[in-house]
Every structure is written in C-alpha cells, then in structure tokens.
Length: 299
Image (cartoon, rainbow, N blue to C red; front, side, top):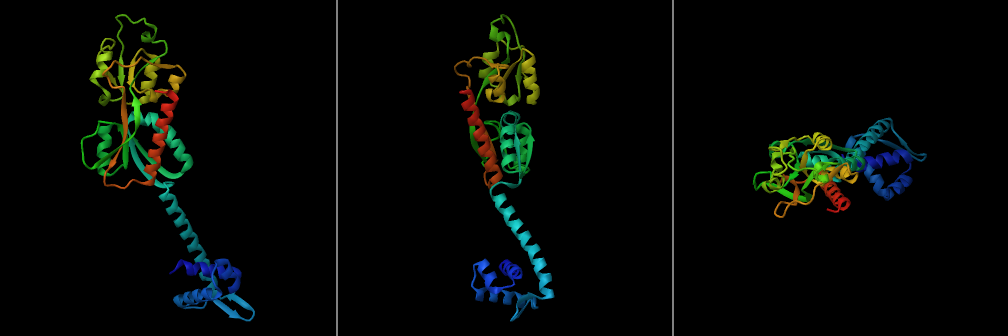
C-alpha cells in the first residue's frame, strides 16, 4: 500500500473538502480524487460519501483513517531513525581502547558524543591489544585504538593515524630527580603495558631504575602511585595533562638523542568493513582531543 495514498486519505479526512485538502498537499483536485478512488478500489470499500452537502467519512472510512494515522506516525518515526542512524546519531557502536588512549581520549570524546547523539549506544571494551585483536577479527568490535606497532601484520586490517603522543617520564612534585637529591638513588619504574617497553628509553632509566619495571594496566592506580611514591612512570604527558598543568606531576627532561620522542596513536579496523557513521564521529572526536592536548601542552 502506497503511503502517499494514506497521507492523501488523512488530509481529506481532516479537511472534508477535496479542494482544500488538495491545496494543503500541493496537488490538483483531480489528482487527489484519483488517489482516493485508487485507495477505495484497493481496499474494496467506500471511505468517503460525496454529495451536494460536501464530503463525509463513512463508518469504514473512520476506522481506516485511524489506522492510517498510526501507520504514518510509525513510518515518520522510522524515517527519522534512518536519518539519525545515517548521521551517526542513533544505533550502536562497539569498539575497544587500550588503557592509555582510554584514559586520555575517552572521557572527553564520549562526553561530546553523549551530548550530540544521546540515542547512539556506545559499547566500549578497555583491554590490552592482545585481548582486543581477536575481538576485532571476530567482528565483536568495529575498531580499537592503541599505540602503533602492537598488532600482527595482517592485510585485512586498516590502520589510520589519529595523532602523535609524546613519550614522557612522569614523576610527582618534589621528586628527588627534580630537586637533584638523588645520588646513588634508585626508583621504581611503572609501565601500563609490556608493549610500551623500549630499550632506548630504558637506557635513560638504567642508572635510576630499582629493578625491572612494574606493569600495571589500570591508569587510576598508575596516577595514584606516581603522585604518592618516588616511582618514574613511562607514559605520555597527554595522559596527565591536567596534573601537569596544576604542577601536581612533572615531566622529566627530554630523553637522550636516539630514544623515541613520540609514538603514533592508531585506530584499527577491518579493511573490507564499511565504517559506521558512529565510528566516523568518534574518530573525529579523538583527533580533536589529541589536537587540543597538543595545543594545551605545546609539546
């Protein structure tokens, strides 16, 4: 059944005048008449009585109009939902984040998306890359975000750079390395993942490190430990931008020449899978957040 005929039916039932209903619809009176006649033939009953006094609904017509209104409301809602889904404002997006980008990017990005698209459901998994990789391959998540160089070489995966993160050695305010009171001292070294370990970085830390690094995947714990102990946290200034600005935490001086000064943050997805509008919006939000951190810290 053509929804246009139903819209014509409802318009005529409201006006009870072919000329006025046709004017509302932007049709000629003859076109509206043909539409109503076609609908009556299709349903096999008269929906309107026509006489010199005007147009009136038949009892059967009253029933059909009521159902047509309900159907048109559902159709309008469906069209609205399709438009919102196409704009990434409705539906569902499932994705993964490694601990560092989750801590650094997720709160600001999701805050913006929850405000802009409250009907879009976000399902987020925060795990290390070893756990995110099989979820991506199985199609359980649409994409995940992590530092570059932690996934297997695979032709079926698309890798897109979101931005560069600086490599930073982070310590608490008043740390001995900041005051110079550190002769023959040794300090715990903290990592969020074994994948972040780099030989060149640890050449810088060798003279200060009190043994092998501690790997702790929970960023809240890492922040607390760095604030309350003499640990050296190998991370990125972006992960503690507010604490650095407030001088609660401090970044040690630049790493020696030859050590990596930054790393790329990458969004991984399946190469032959279309990217949903929700993913596109989140990708944009992540990039904006990284750009904002770069501008704020001037690194």
